[in-house]
Structures are given as structure tokens and as C-alpha cells.
Image (tube, rainbow, N blue to C red):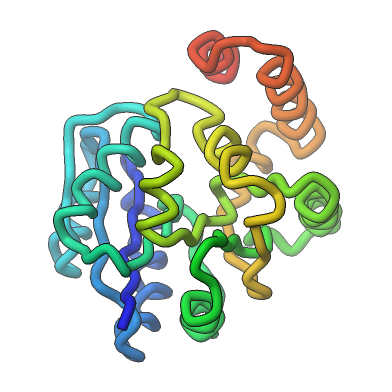
Length: 232
């Protein structure tokens, strides 16, 4: 029976990581989970302590989300069999109750496709609902889920595609483009992401900046230059 290893890139994520582990425990209760692996970029808070407390594997050294995801998957290959699956999940994103059954059904029925969660924010305001609808339209029309929607993919398919590139930005877009729209499928259940950055920067401003960076990416700008612009 195929099992699921969840890979979480982290950096000073103690404020959110505990709730993510609580949500992921559902997979352990039904025997789906093969464990959790945290790819940490040198956190100075309690991130690694939290990971150890719940028995998660920890990989350190890589910096930048793309490099962390790649390092996490490399370590995951030593912990799993060829028939197992990976769930890549951000440290501030937690699947909603019932996720493990949706994921289990997908793993049983698909062998050459990847799945993603419906985008949701932990903000009750109308701006969050509007952004959620926009993301749903993007996924429906362009087959372009981002990393904050998670990525469920078999180890075989992940390795056949060459995995994540160690990019500082748009590593998620790069991989889903290689997966291809026809091999991407919604899981039919949401994962809730922290809205903190949208609340701090403003929904309109952050969304516009993200769209601008995405347009520059499609026009051929390097991920390194885009990451510099993102940080500014």
C-alpha cells in the first residue's frame, strides 16, 4: 500500500507550524502517513524543536524555498519506497478536516497525475473571498496552482520530471508547468493559508506585485532577479 510523506519547507515558522502538524495528524490516524519531513533554512525560533517534538525528520542547510523543497525530496527518497507519494506543503498552510480521505482516494485512483488543494485564507473578510475566487479561476483556466495550495505527487512522477529546481522564486510554477495542465487535478478540499502578508501589505498591492512578477517570469526574467524584486 502506498503511503504519504509530507515535506514542509520552513524558516522561523513556529507560530504556524504547530497547527499544521495538528491538521496533518489526521493522516496518521487513518494509516495514510509515512511521516513528516521539515526542510529548515536555519530557523532561530522554535521551529526545529516543534518538528522534533512530533517526530518529524529534519533536513537543514539549504536556503530558499526551491532549494529546501529539492533537499527535502532528496532526503525523502531515502525514507520512502518507489510506490509512495509526496505532499509538499508550506509551513503556514494547513489542510482542512477530511483532507486525508480526499488524498487517499486520489492516490488510489491516479498513477500519473498530481493533485492540489483549493486555495483558502484564514481571513473572514470579503477581500479574502474575492482573492480565493480569482485563484480558483486561475487554476481552472490555466492549470496553475501555486505552492500555497500544496502539491500531491507520486514519487515516481516527481522523479521522472526532475523535481524542484533550487530556485529562490517560482519553483512551484516551474514544476507545475512541467507536470502539465492535463496531469493536474484539484483534490476537492481546501487548505487554509495564513493571510498575514496580505493583511500587512494590502490585498491589492500584494496581488498586483505577484502578477507583475509572474508576467516577468513568463517573459524570461531570471528567478534570482525576480527574488530580489520580491524582497524589495
